[in-house]
Length: 149
Image (tube, rainbow, N blue to C red):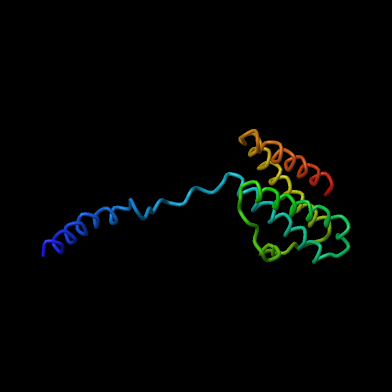
């Protein structure tokens, strides 16, 4: 009887400890890495270029290297922040490019410019160990803007 009372008392004493979260922590997930938006942006830009190629195969020689550069940037950024890239191939954006070649290139150039601006902002805010990578991505995007003229 004494043993049973002791076990019940110990059980009752530990129940509140497990209920308060000390043993099974329910911390909120950490916020996304600031560079995650650059990963997402690189994947989006790569998909936009691939969609333009699918719509007009004559643009393949011009746009394929840019799409591949964005895919490489996404992979390097993902490795830096420790997140996996989606396993499936990137899909085309919801709105495929429309219009003549000039319009498609203008739309891509505007997307590249927005991406360049974001990368430049992230570079200025990045810690030293990430600034070189993000700066090189901003420079590449600036080059893409010019290549699409």
